[in-house]
Image 1 (spheres, rainbow, N blue to C red):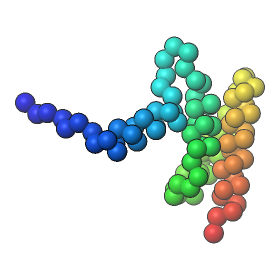
Image 2: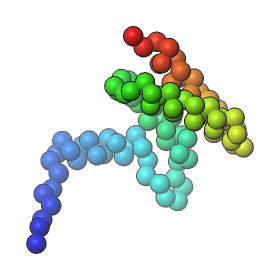
Image 3: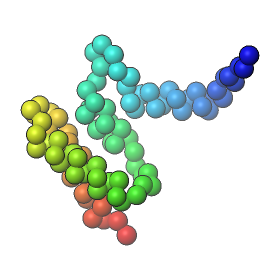
Image 4: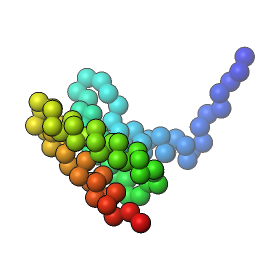
Length: 91
């Protein structure tokens, strides 16, 4: 029988931090758009490929265009604009 080692105190603290940033789903869960907005706001700098940001911006712009929920449209549009500004300001 294989046993799984318990996580280190650092790993447990990191896990708690992530769960605070990205609430778990369930009854009374925070909508996905709010989770994403909160997560993006908490991140200062994370290296990533420009193509990923471009694709995400396109998807968010489309979501902002077709969503029937005003809060979702606003969150998607704001996030897409932030991604576009990040892409425009890269070196």
